[in-house]
Image (cartoon, rainbow, N blue to C red; front, top):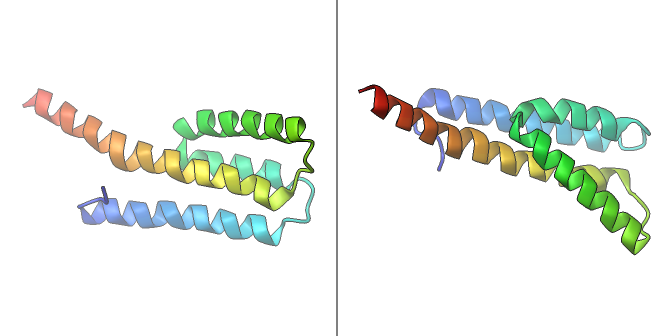
Amino acid sequence: MTPKSTAGRAFAILWMAGHLILLVFAFVQREVHDMPVAFIWLLMPLSFPLSFFGIVIVGVLQSEIISLLDLRYQTYPGVLLYWFTSVAVGYLQWFVILPKVVRCLSRTKN
């Protein structure tokens, strides 16, 4: 499931580096009250469009669970769920689904 081409590997490294940079940003800025908002807006383009739906679903589930269990929201652990969702959905989108679509389209053109 890893990219086979050099360009694909370079894209995968840059894509993951973007995610890791945002994770470090979230850790360093964890005391800033608006950090989760900035984090999500910076995270979403890395795996858009599927990340939008994944992040919305995680946000709704997270807020419901916090409300039901009467938990206290913690900034950094809260954004980790969004980060893992973006990585998982983005990997699926960029390195599984998109290559299959490209292969199918190239087969139908020939």
